[in-house]
Image (cartoon, rainbow, N blue to C red; front, side, top):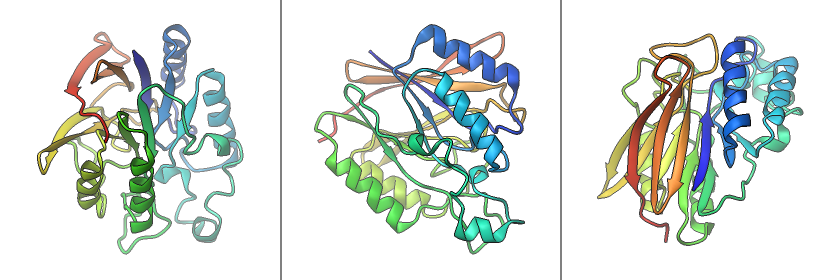
Amino acid sequence: MVKLFHVSDVHFGAEDPQAIAWFSERVREERPDAVIMTGDLTMRATRSEFERGGAWLRSLGVPVTLEVGNHDIPYYWDPFRRLFAPYQRYAAVERMIERELDLAGVTIVPLKTTARAQWRWNWSKGRVSPGSLRRALALIAAAPEGRLIFVAAHHPLIEGGTKGTAKTRHGDSALTALAAAGAHAVLSGHVHDPFDVPVDRDGRIVRMIGAGTLSKRVRNSPPAFNEIRIADGRFETIARTMDAAPRRPISEEVARPHA
């Protein structure tokens, strides 16, 4: 069995120290094969927040791949850095960003959903550019046959029924294209509540899987992460919450092999 821990929205600078320690203890005791971090490692994209977040991820002692979230780009009041040098402060985590993982039977495909600027007021919302989608589709096409394909993004491509919203531009059409290409699930964060929603696209089911938060910025759920168990052609998502009911299975899906 392959076991993945899917975590998101830790928000160093507004992190919950107890939740951070709880997750670290779970990794240390249960030894997942990898950690997939789907963005918003930081709160304000400062160098010190990246350094603290990077040190924490390295301390886990398992392979980590990291996506960039909207909070990991400098804020609007620093427009020059946001537009022309948004990744300048990433040194502490650069090697983890979109890192390829060697996992038995699973391929993780990155999909960038953040944007330096958009034609709307709220730049925190998601956007899938044509270039980002092309790169993801090319990686799916290059994946070995028989693999499960998990796409890792920060924003949900469509809404998952949570209080928070992503309003991802071109997300719906991107989901259709990813499903047609053979993706089995899209892992995301941003909304701070766990969810797992099966979506039918032309007869093919692709799962939208969202992780909770390990920050103080909780919404409808306590601090949480997802455990994804993969075995015998199936994958199961379990929401792991830091409360009296710490394990909540939220899906089990028969996976069709990637061809």
